[in-house]
Length: 334
Picture 1 (cartoon, rainbow, N blue to C red):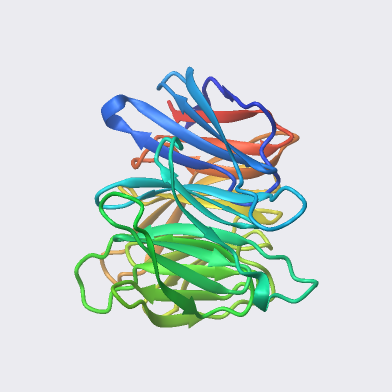
Picture 2: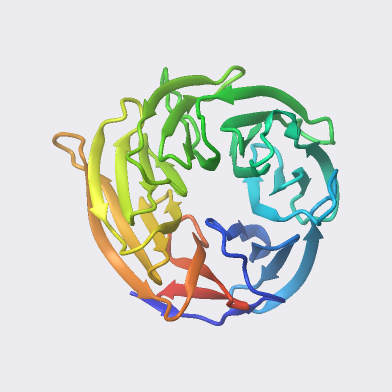
């Protein structure tokens, strides 16, 4: 069971975007960082365990070429082996900062040259894999940036072509040292999933076709892809083969966020039906099949939920954002 904790106040509402919450835990300093997008700005907040807000910072989207102020689409902390970068995507480009948002170390402008006049140009979907940061694009491409151990000498090393529609989300997990390991999955507006092996050259391993609804959020756990769809379903696939293991009719409306607590195999799903559910994933010892158990359901009344994340790797606490809600709601296990 989870109980409601002290909320963290925001300067404004979270924008009505899927995956609109990023969380970075700093156990050494006993702090948790939260990142939320609203319009042309992103709010970064630091909070102590009791939820006391200690610091706030506001980042603006870099203007780039264009008349109107650019809208931010996502903010996400990327934990690399040797450093942590904060990545911010918008309708103009990709901005990378030191983890506290104090210094911008890289700017990549979007090239609208291959977009039609009626097509929106934006970046969306952010994940770290090894010493690479991967960012999804409106065109369906995924940009792979090679990140040095320190400094601003970031290089665009590769562009992955597996999708024909805009990327919605990207998930990764550390490679376990096996051959041909599936350690990254990308999702798009058509519901198509592409599973990749990362490395100096990324390799497309398998494609999991969509079924007519978008896939706004995706996660990866021990070789299992967890995908949340616009019809409220959560589906679990074998990453290496694309085999469907489990289909859960988890929500009554579109899913807006999934998250995983990797230490314990807990999956969090949040949707526009105002509910946040927590599921326990496990593999059966006999056949190796994925088993799912429902652990908890939390209703956030009268709120269009747009982001939800675990606040620690053990899944003992989580946070939720909603449109027209000027606070981050926090819940912890009793």
